[in-house]
Structures are given as C-alpha cells and as structure tokens.
Image (cartoon, rainbow, N blue to C red; front, side):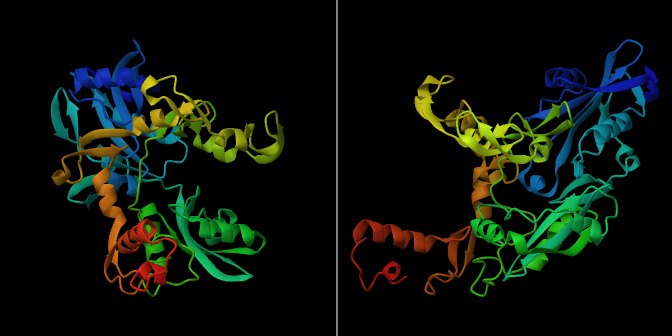
Length: 419
C-alpha cells in the first residue's frame, strides 16, 4: 500500500494505542519512561499508519546534553507513506512549545519488519555526530539563541555566571539583555547566591558574555568562564565568585522522575511537573491575595504559596504499609518516592549490573559523578581527599568522632577541635 502524506493527518494518541501499534508492526517493547505519542492517520478510513514517540532523554549523560529524545518511529507493515516521517516530526515541532533540541540514536527505520538505513534525518536538517562511541542525529531549534551572562551589582564586588536562552533566531546582545532572567543560583542549593541576589536586587547588572546557536556550546563557554573560581573548587578559588559548581554540562543528581511530556489546553504538549504545566507555572503572575486558610499570602496565579508548601502528617490511604507519613497536597511522600526508584540494569556502565535507579539515573553512576579527589579547603592536612560535592570525607569522619567522643571537650590532637 502506497500513500502520500497529503492524504494523512496527525494527532496525539494514547500511549497504550501507540505501544500496541509498535508491538504489532515493529516488535519493539514500550519505553520505560513516559513518552508522548503522535499517530499518522489515513484520511480515507482513519486507519493508524504510523507512530512517532518523544520522551525526556533516557540516558543520564544525554539528559544533561539534550532536552528531548525521539525514541520510536514506525509505520504499518506492507505500507509506504511518502513524506510521513517528516509530517510527524514537523507536527511535533510546530505544536511543542519551544523545543530547544532533539536527538535520535538510530539511523534506521523498520519497513515491513526489515531495518533499512534512512537519510530522512538529514532531510529534516539534523546533523550527525558521535558521543561516547554512539552515532546520533541532533536537531537544534534555529529559532532559539543561547547565551552566557554575568550578574554583578553596583554596590558589591561579587559576581555570578550563568546560561539562558531567548526564543529568537540570531538574537543580538540587546535581545539577550531584554530577557530579564538573572539566574537562579545554578544547580543544587546555592543559597549564597540567592541571598546575595535578594540583598542587592535593586543594584543588579547583567552583562552578555557570549551568544551561541546551541545549548552545548553555551554550557562549554560557561565552564571556561567559571574555571576554578567556583566556591570550594580548590585552594585558589575566588571568594567573590558565587557559582556553586564548575559550570558546563551538569554531572550531579538528575532524577527527571517527576517531569514528563503532557498536553496542556493552552500550550499544547509541554513539560509538566507532576500535573502542573511548566509554562503555565512560569507565566502565572505573582501577587498578594487573600487565602481562606492563611489570610494575605503570596499567590502564583490562584495558588497560595503556603498552601502548596504545607506538609501534613497523616495515614497513607494508598499503601497501608506506609502508615503515618508526610503529605503535601494529599500526596504521600513515600508513594511519590517509590514511583521514581527502580531496580534495573545500568546502561551506562555494565560493571554496575542491576542497581537502584532514580528515574533514569543509576545510583552508582550518580555517586561516582559527585565524588572528586582534591585538597580540602578547610583543613590543609587533608591533601587529595575524597569530596562529595563540597564536603570533605575526612572532615566528616573527624566530625563524627568528635561528636561521639568529646563534643564539649577540646582536645589538642583533634583536628576538628582546631577547626
């Protein structure tokens, strides 16, 4: 059967329908992460002829580099749809809100149960590259410009580097400055920057350091700018630098468990945090309103900040084995944690075998990425010591011994007492 794309239409379909189609026509199993599925239908009889699926990147390393992964592409057996793949892909690009980049692992598609090499990705304008010995195709949104910036204050000598983007092709430095984003403090709990920013908010200044067509180039430039200046990076770190990490593509904890692609009535298919649309959350204005429970309180849109953050200890209704646990918005914390924790084989490092995964992140890989060897900034005797983030293992061990044995007594041979 041979049809043309002009005789078809595209629409979002249920994941179960897409998985059944893939099983019948491709023999592939369902992806382990939540995916958004698009179906290509024949106008004549509304028959499903093809499926394309997107999801957040499954591999931890790729999750740091790219926003989305095209994970499945399949057409009905004994059928040829000319222009069908391009129509599915373009429909997604037109209806997804500002996709910054997409990558694809395979360079083959299945046609009548036979894998054939395709050049359709080149036709879409994707570029071929190799990462960790894997050949992939990359699509970068031409209507998005990435940039690096520096935040300073006229009444302070401290500074902060960051990365952001604007939804404009070949944006100028002025366009980037018009984007009022001044940084969140980076990855992790960087309260030092947030407190500084709050204190000097009336005097903040933003300088554009570089403009780039891709996210990866921008992050590489950020890493060059920060270098060894970031807090506790080495003995010669710059105390005026407010960055808590060395910039670049982040290698710390990434769960991604609560983030998935869903359809929003206003924005189409976009990222959701739980059941909340990310763009809706961002666009909702912050104002002070009257809450029935808390009186005058900050609201984002119609949601009270205090109501959203309040925690209640009560009996879990979904799982009796949890007993009394902390709840937020009627959601049991233990139930939510169990959704993201699975035992499965590590795809990045075969030596790890079956490990605990948080979302798609292997626990062992995550721990290895967070651990570095360097000289301790607090104790000069701790040379080339193991660090998890900014915490020295040896300092932590001495602190434990100190707290157990002589918390209220100062001893000369205890280096923790000296500190």
